[in-house]
Image (cartoon, rainbow, N blue to C red; front, side, top):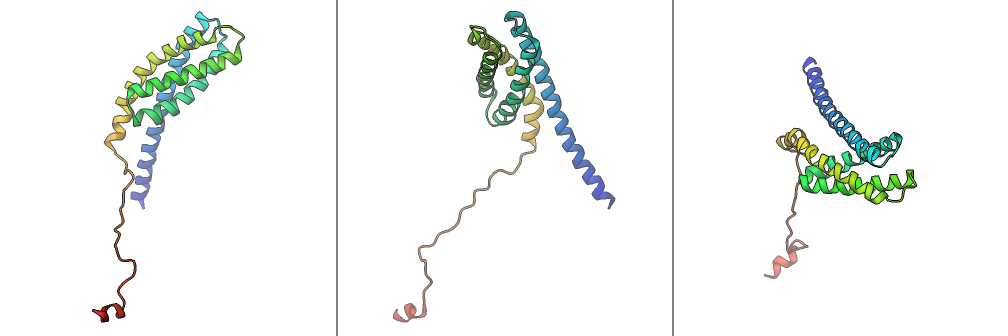
Length: 165
């Protein structure tokens, strides 16, 4: 009885450790992106902090789920960084276009996305060292490819077929 409780406790601790690592990684990403976008969008383009904060929330959640959890483990740093650049450009442009009536939101989005691109390159290196290497050391079982054997005969020989020979 106690062995099962200890085993369940150890499993919960492992799951809690994984969740805590994701919380830590997301917090690093969110705070760094907030500081970076605040420097670029508030200082250079005079966007209010509330707009920068909303852009950071949407971009942080989407980029962490799509770029860091889905794309990065299946590809490499370059592909994940470029996909994060495209996502950052689209999110920053779309949200700044809706928040402001400024004329050149494309250039503002491009400059901010380049800043995000540089940060994401180094953040992905951090994730590869701390998350993806651990996941590869504990590989999960992939799709098993079963094959069935096919025979040429669809009907078994009957007694009458054996009598003819």
